[in-house]
Amino acid sequence: MSDTIYDFHKFVEVLKEAKLGKAGEAASFVWWAEHRDNKRGLLMSEICDYFDKARLAQPNKSRLEGDLRKARFVTRDKVLRYHLTRDGLKEGVKLFHLFIRDQTNEEIISAIPVNKIPYISDADIADARRMAALYVSLFCLENSIRRHIQSTLEVSLGPDWWNVAASNSMKRKEEDRRKNENENRWIPSRSDSGPLYALDWSDLVTLMRKYETLFRETIPDVNFSHRFSDLGNLRNVVAHNGVISDAIQFSRVELAAHDWIKQLAEAAPGRT
Image (cartoon, rainbow, N blue to C red; front, side, top):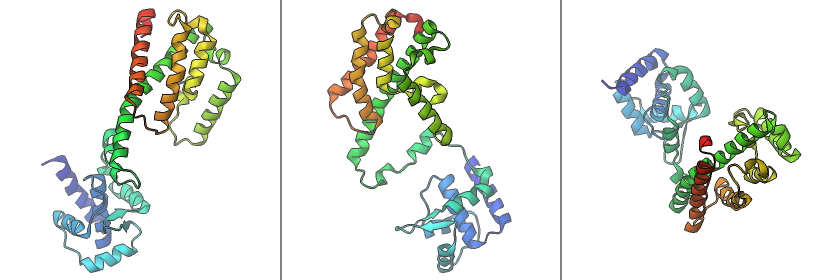
């Protein structure tokens, strides 16, 4: 017997003990369908199938439809599918918390019906997937630059490197963003990774230029860091959900990443 079948049998036992009535049982099947069977709501016929699967007496469909219209745990959409309301989600977690299966981030994301989002076309989705691939390269490159800056400044300026190196505007930006994160704790924190993660791309380039002499061991030619100023404009397009269609721009990101890898590998192999 598979774990899913075994869990469903245990789920039905809990359902019977709760004595929820037909409308409550129907809402519970919607909960199971959405949380365990990865379905987006249920039609009335599908709800009845769950009654069969649970070996429970079939409901009177007309009466059940009327009861569900009055219930606060489910709502019905334009194509007559029943979905859990916020109250239904809360009550479901209380009653069936033992049956909640942890999902991976990939499973959660793949379950989002992006093709049903209003005004979004197949072409938009294709553009988004291309930008996601480009984002991976920019993410790795930008954070590598952040870590190299921190490593270099820590070695040269000591543990108080941030207070020494950052300009007043950089410190204000970091403080404002940290304050916003503290006030909105549901937002993932960037500050936990260090103050440089609160800065923008242009700020990173500014620090490298300001302390050019400290970076000469790894970046002897200041013009090498200048090229990253232009790359920041491409990064901003991707970060703000824009679209880059020119293959040349993709090549610029690829070239910058290769150059960064080679530069640090040859100049400071112990730091890579």
